[in-house]
Length: 190
Image 1: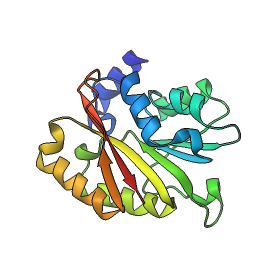
Image 2 (image 1 turned 90 degrees about the vertical axis):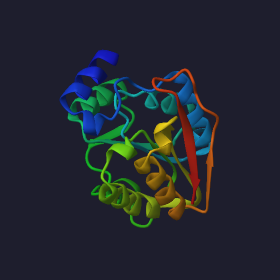
Image 3 (image 1 turned 90 degrees about the horizontal axis):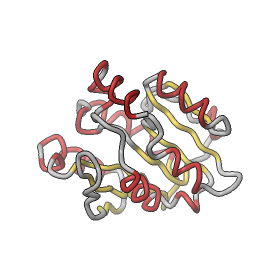
Image 4 (image 1 turned 60 degrees about the horizontal axis):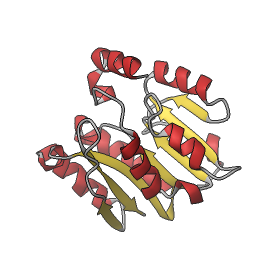
């Protein structure tokens, strides 16, 4: 999986956003913060090669529904083969018709994002959050991560401010040092 990730990074580094998949330590932190074990509807943005998907799959309750969206069709094809009981789509989060998955007016319990937010233009960050946050239940949580140090750059600060505007509370975890690069998790509660 790491070779696939690295190859896709070389071909499209702006969309892939990292040189290596997230570590198991970061995956555990994300899944715990997202309360996947209590979720009945789960949205994963940017599952990539499945660093979080594997743990989501083994943690989510029986009967829970999962949707993974990624712009990279290579990642989606591999994940669809690996997890035939989960639903994946090669689609842009800001344009996806969630009614086809959830039904009219239904919402997700949790959203887990592996998207490279700070690599995106501000307009794209806004478009994605404006489209997915209304589909998150009140009290639901969006979890995403930031690379330690990068969160202090202007793009990282802007994203944190934007995330704050879309939630009622925003908390962070401790840094997961055994990740490349080290990262921490944002939990944005709607």
